Image 1 (cartoon, helix red, strand yellow):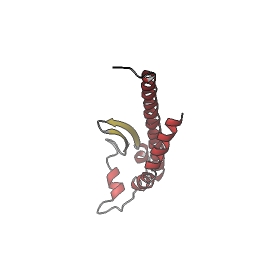
Image 2 (cartoon, helix red, strand yellow; image 1 turned 45 degrees about the vertical axis):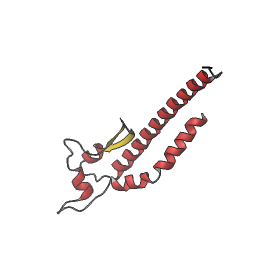
Image 3 (cartoon, one colour; image 1 turned 120 degrees about the horizontal axis):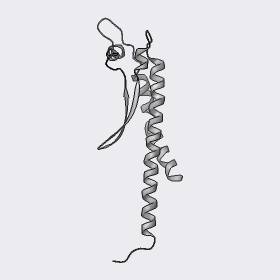
Image 4 (cartoon, helix red, strand yellow; image 1 turned 30 degrees about the vertical axis):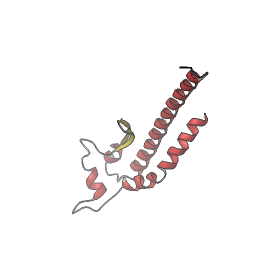
Length: 121
């Protein structure tokens, strides 16, 4: 079978472009997570500051793609859901959902922008 001239070089450039695009998307997702964590920490009720300090993010690779995971609470700060959703005695003091709802509207556009920018460079 005949080899098309330049095909190997084209494949190499394509693989490099895809790897560059993936790294840029991961970096953009990480930056989005950091920005969301800052906003959630700012919005969190602060009595001791432990709740705000417990907020963190991770970029997690799964079999079906990449996910941004926002984690609120830890072994010591187990009460985060009670603050966010309220209890029979305590009112709802949502500090995570408003940030997530505000950001999720803009995520598709940001991903599209990041993909187009990564192919331009």
